[in-house]
Structure formats: structure tokens, C-alpha cells
Image (cartoon, rainbow, N blue to C red; front, top):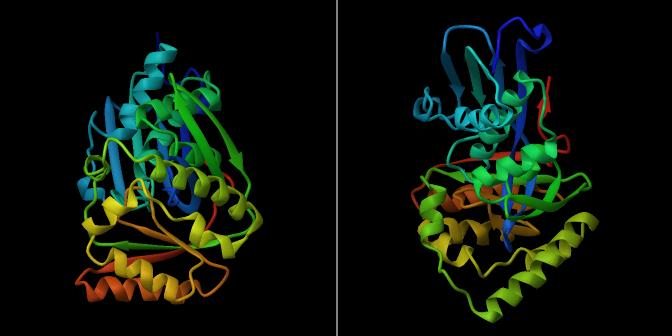
Length: 308
């Protein structure tokens, strides 16, 4: 069945914005993520001729403009499930979230693509269904869940279904420092061990529980312990020049808790104040290692993906 242009005039064009995310936050590997106030924007239209994609902003020169584009891949999942597909599809992608940064750019593409396709075909799928499909495509829910729902999200993907909780957090500003170092998620995952010791598993379980509570209650004094990790950071940090020194510099400048953002190479730091000084200190550490970097001071996003 084909949805013809003109059949639903109110759905001729859709605009979707999706927030950046930071996953893991130290111990919550593949399970925890938080939405941040930096967004990618997607405009969908069923007008035109065939498939047209325009990409602007961050990483535009590196992004596919054909069926390989992740936004299109995600949209096709929805078209296949609902059994409808527009005769033409035009997508404008405006990126503020850097690609391959550990800030959830792929999740913005997946959520944006699925919400756009769902809207163009009459919103037949619920957000819960969208979340399950997005997590299946991403293979874990830690980024797609906060990207869709906002706030702090904790989720488990089992048999294609996400079971999780979204937590509203008090007002937070966080530091993101992105060194110029290409880190692909698949490569960052490939360096991880396939098995871990009981002691390491226990260490992460306790810290994950502590992290959720400490973030909700703004117990900054507990974050340094809560954001420690034994499952992925000990293997990923040495692969990024200057990262270990940047962690130490951020703490020295007053950070309460520091972690790699997702698979990296970004660093995320929580603090009650002094955010610019923390960012500058981390950047100086990267500079000493011969690595240029960028910084953001962001709030925790509470809205998640928006369709208008």
C-alpha cells in the first residue's frame, strides 16, 4: 500500500528534533544514558521525486546521501512494518551533534528516521513500539531511550523489548570535551574483553545503583566513586591520547564525577559549579598530548524527541 502525496495534507512535512545523549556514565555500560541540550534536526516531506537527502552542519561531508544513510535505514524499518511507503521522500538533516563523538549522533538518526516515517504514515506506532525498534537497530537502549524520552534513562533490551525507567533529574549543567580522535563504536567495542571477573562485575553493579540515586539527589560528593568503572573504560581510555590526563585535570579543576561519554572519545564531567574551568583544564591536558579539542557546557534535556 502506498501513501500518496496529498492524501494527508497535515502530514506533508514533519520536523523532528532529537537530543544528543551520553551513555554509560561510567559503570552503566549499555544500560544508562542521559539526554543533553544539543540537538539534530530532521525535516521529512513526501513531496519531490524519489529519495533526496540534504545534509548540513556537523559531519555533513562524511554522511551518506542515499539508502545507506542511517536516517533512511531507520525510516525503512517503519515503512516495512506499517506496510506503507510514500512515493517520494525528501529529508533535510541539520546536525549540531558531532558524528563518531560518543554523543549519540547515531541514535538521533535512528529516532529521527523512525519518528519521521511514523508521522508520514499516520502515526500508527506508539512511542513504546518506536523505542523497541530503535533499540533493536542500535542493539542496546542506552542512547536511543534518552534520545526519545529525555532525562536519565535506564533500560534493558531482551528479546527485542526494552524494559526500563526514565528519571527526571534536577537541573544539571555538564561539561563535554571532545578531542579530535576518531572513535568508531564498533572498534571501541572490539577492544573489550568477552568475560569479566566476579569482582569487576560486583564493582560495577554497586556503582550503577549508587550513580542513579546520587544523580537524582544531586549528591555530588558520591559521584567520583559512583562513576568509576571496570568493564570498559580501563580498555578504552588508553586508546585515546591525553584522556587519562584529561580525567585527572578535570578532577583537579573541581569536577565531581568524570567518565567517557559513550564509547568516546568525548569526556563528560558533572559538577556543581566551575564548569568552564573544568572544561578548560581537560582541554589543556589534551593540548599537552598534542590533541586539539572542543568543549560544550550543556544542560540535561528533559523533552526528548520533539515532532512538530
